[in-house]
Length: 236
Image 1: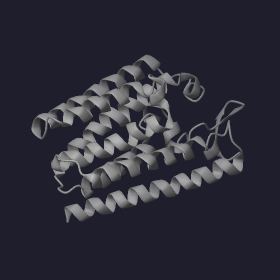
Image 2: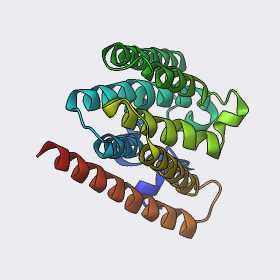
Image 3: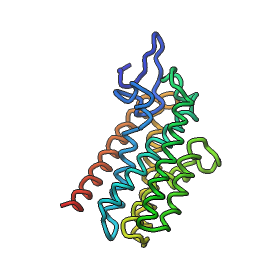
């Protein structure tokens, strides 16, 4: 079995349960926790929403990215790793669950603090997004309430809400374009999530997981490309 498709621990070969449990990402649980391939897709969609808003303010965009980095990239992902201990423990047997969970919770609070600061600067209505975003980041990974840890819940927490919040903070208003964009990208992240699920080698055959990884690469390339091009169009 190729090295990029399996973990080898002694004589034991572990099938991959996540598409990013490969290469440099598998070296350390703290590094893996950033989930960079997927986090960069999130940042790409945030960039798309920010740049397609009626106005574009670089300072608001950077603060939005900072809040998302703390709250979702670090916070939600670290909490998820500890909540899914049976899933990841075979790959990171020495991980300190308590330390990772503590950093995750503190990161969510830091992201919310950035959001509160943005609310005070630009619009108090943004607090609605801050509160909902903090709720999703803290409770989606632990599957409470149950409805949140579903495909619709994922679409709302990782697509619809971040996109709408990013769109709103630029011009402090919401229109049909913003709502339509949030709905579309909310559905798109569910599609990405399902492709990631299909890469689980414990559950699916080699041909299916191989095709799912290819589709994920195409999806990521599209997200990175459009986000970068739209950002450049706003900066030049």
